[in-house]
Image (cartoon, rainbow over all chains, first blue to last red; front, side):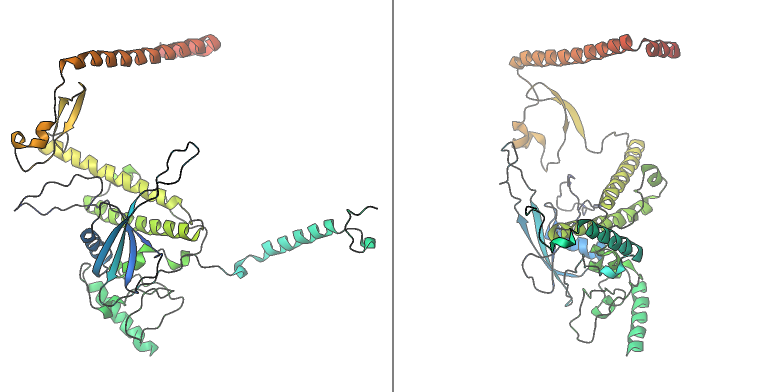
Length: 153
Length: 252
């Protein structure tokens, strides 16, 4: 429904709670362990329930959801800063959503490696010229026959 | 084969356009409008083959599903992604309520997509492309919320005359301070509510001494602030007499 909002009290026969402009933001994450093909892993706010997530995905994204399971991940409180004061990483809830109708999902590669051919020719020419200049500066006396200069004489 | 697939695709697109947003259509129609370069989705039927480097068919957003958690595939691997400025309050005030409602969900989906990208970038230990997009979206959503709150407050003031949506009252707490106590909804009256009756909205007489001490501390700090400001003004006037004369003549 929404974070940081007081939910009104419900009594029998009361109206259905409707929240316009929900405050929940979720992230699709790559699973750390191998999951079945129809399972999608989300990080959701702590105040969100599995029913909330199901309605969220079905109404906002149009994703048919068969089942949702949630767990709370404890954020570590073990690290300490320069003052020896504990630094807390925030807790978050993880949801495992199984898609309906036999759909499957694999987390895509969002950072594919680009081939280097897309570099501009002018840039590569400049780089080659600079490399040649550097090499010419560093070449030692050819009469020494490749012997390093830190030998005496 | 290819022609028949394209024909089926076009039919699927038209059907998807007619279908309503909330309906969960059968499997054959879910594949119509969405194609992904990496073939993220796959059906159980073996006939579907991945189409490499195919463009999105931007038919209806309702049929994209989980792809909306990711950016346009052209932007994957880019270092910079161009984006516009955030929405300002004044721009949003010109929009109707329906438009603001739709914009809220557009911004929500964009924010979810950027949060997904941020988390994946942290996971892969790579820099996120254009992180300023997230700040812009957050600012836009805050501005939208502010505008909607303004409209709701105005409407409530006109219709009921109440300044705040949640009822409350000025009360003295246990420590003698005057606080704005916000009311909570209970299913039973206050005199039968054991938890509410344990709260005390009065202060005993021995607290008056500490109230006086707090008042003295507060007045002392205020006096120190005003005297500091006066000293600074005086020192500035001594150092720059011409400017102080100009200021006095302009104000006079």
